[in-house]
Length: 239
Image 1: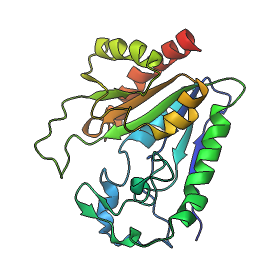
Image 2 (image 1 turned 90 degrees about the vertical axis):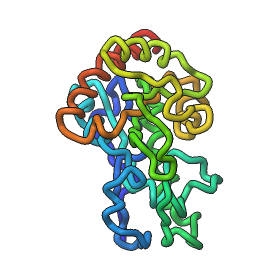
Image 3 (image 1 turned 135 degrees about the vertical axis):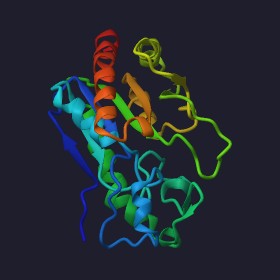
């Protein structure tokens, strides 16, 4: 009946904190979403490749990571508690019938609140870690097949773009096609970073990796190798 709302990897005293809201596709045994289980392997359920890239970055010794412990279809950690999309009833054209008419307060108390309490504790460590918000995006949406998504990595932010201005040219120099506020804007969707970084003046980098490029071991290793020195550069220049 119980499922951990989050998992922590590495040393909380590390200079970089990775926050991965959508790292898991896990659905607790006592929650029936009413969907085909195959959907749990798709982008609507989790950010593909994020858990693996986070683990590789932690293995460098310079990062700690907190990974969301349940699927975004159970509850979306990167949403404000009062938003309609917090517990989705449909996602990219897929109906989630098991989420209709549920007690959202129960899921907030069981998953969302303890996750954000843990994030707040890690982000507020005395060592003032630089924060990486790590996500991935699908190369194509079922509901918007006409929408092109050519970017290999996207950088998102709201008001604080300090790290973004360092990272974007560095990522381009590494050979990536970089989207500035793509595939969507951090000014519209940035709940976790607004709460734990921008509200406290903590520098952070919001990263969206394209899922077809991080779905396998080779791609995950490539992104770790690219991101690690850029994160350290951001940390050293801003904090």
